[in-house]
Length: 194
Image 1 (cartoon, rainbow, N blue to C red):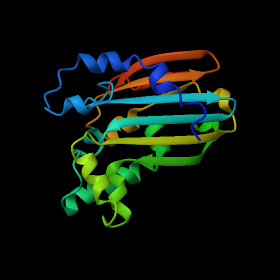
Image 2: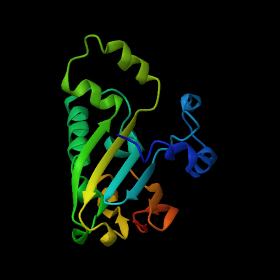
Image 3: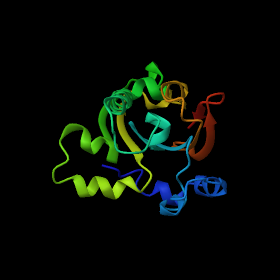
Image 4: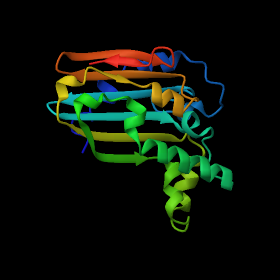
C-alpha cells in the first residue's frame, strides 16, 4: 500500500536535522527515534505518480488532539474522535483543486490513541502501556485517483492548519513530474508546489 512513500521518511527528509536542533524539554525525549518528534511540527510526504496521488502525514498527537497520553476522560475521547473525523475528510485538509478531479481511494489512520477507541483494553493493555512512556504519533496515509493530474500544481494546507491549530509548521516533501522538492510550511505560507 505504501509503494511510493515507503522510502521517503528516511531517505529524503532534512526535517530530522531541524528537529534535532530543537531543545526538547521533556525528560523522555531520548525515547524518540531519530529525534524527529517535535511539538508543533509535522511531516508530510506527497507523491504524484501518473494519476495516483499519495499523501502521508506524520504528526505528534499533541498537534492534533492537544495531548499524547491514553485518553483518560470523555473529553479526551471526544477530542480523539473529532481529530479522527477531520483526518477522514482529507479534501478539506489538503486543498486539492476541483479541476484535478481527485477522488479518495484509500485512507489509513494509525495511532496508539486510535487503538483503544473501538474496542476495550483487554489483551491490548500491555501494548497501550508500552506507548504511555513514548510520544504518541498520528500517521495518516491517503491515496487519491486523479482524473486530470496535470491540474494538480500544488497542495494548500491552509485547511489542515485551521483544523489543527496546534500544528505550527510542516516539513513537506513533494515528488511529481518535475522532480522532488521540499518546503517548510506554516499557516502564513501553507502552499507547496509539485
